[in-house]
Amino acid sequence: TANQPTEASVNQEQESCASCRFWKVTDVRNLTGTCRLNPPVIVERLFDGHDDIDHDVWMATRHPITNDDDWCGKWERKA
Image: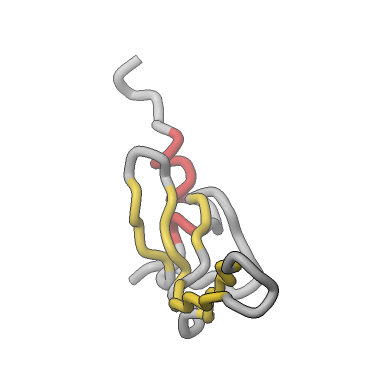
């Protein structure tokens, strides 16, 4: 029915990422986002070359990606 809550609206009423002040939605369709509680972490990937000596390292930073219904012990209600 029209008055039934959606999954997203239920998650926003619970102590979950969706209702946390540190969470930023990045994909509405898949209900995922990033946790901004802490600074981004370094993500490092090693790309091997054709022998044991040659390789390239690619580094970037990322905030943790979480689902809207995930939770942790540092949740704070959105203002």
